Each structure stands twice: as C-alpha cells, then as structure tokens.
Image (tube, rainbow, N blue to C red; front, side, top):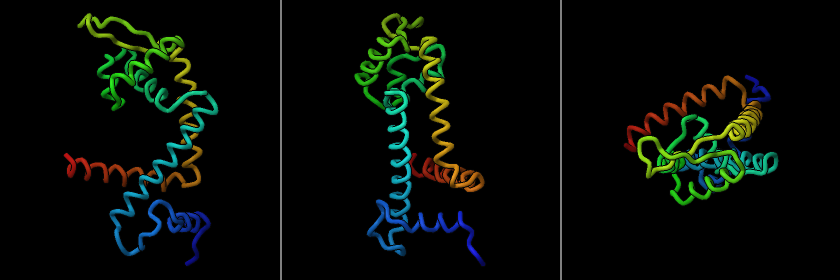
Length: 171
C-alpha cells in the first residue's frame, strides 16, 4: 500500500531526532512520549514568543496577563490573577504597573474589600488584546495547518483523554 505525501512527512517527523534522541525506539516509551510532548510544546511556545515580540513588541507573559483579564470584564483581584497565571504577586504587580502606564489596564478598589485592588482592561486594553489575540490564533492555525484538520482533531481528542488519565493519576 502506498504512503501519501502527508503520511510520509509525518513518519519522517516522527523519526527525526528531537529531545528524545539517544533513546532507542524500543525502550523508554513513557520517557520518549513525555519528551516528544515537551519538545512540541516548547517549539510552539518559542514561535509564539517570537511572533509576539516581532509583531507587537510584547512578551508572552504580558499576552497571558491580558488574556486572563479579557475573560473577566469586571476584573480580577490581583491575588486571583497571580493564581491564574501561576506567578508570584510581585510579577503581577510589575506587569500591572507597566500596563497601567500604557493605559491598557486600570486598578480599581474592590467593591467587597476596599483593602484589595481589582484590575481590569481599559477600552484601549481590550482593543490591543483583541488585535493580538486574532493574530495569535492565526499563527496557531498556520502552525497546525500542514498537520491536517482530521489529524489535528484526533490528536486533540487523544490529548483530552490523556489529560483525563493524568487528572485521575495526579490528583
């Protein structure tokens, strides 16, 4: 049975050495799988970081910060935002200071606890984030397009199943 061009490309990619190089193809399947996932994730992240810097002069951290706030138009407490971003409060304070200075974010006193501050996107922040988010999605579509829609969907479903297994295993 003949292999089509897309399958041949996928096979060559699967055989190309990556971070899992040096491990035999018969051994260490779990380690090889983990390293393959890590390599793919790192490559995608590096591409997105480079594109954000080149096109918008910004960082992935700032993009992630804005993305979190875009999901909560009423704003988030600084502590909650740092938990969602999985960074320290100091990191969030630094990013907040920068983005307030640029007019993309505003601090407001929390209605329920005046000792706490809530941060939210300004109209300009929403506009800037929406522009970046549209490009971000386009970059991802372009990255995954050669993989093929049906294979991408199948991989998405398999990774969802893996995530369920990991959730049960890891607590």
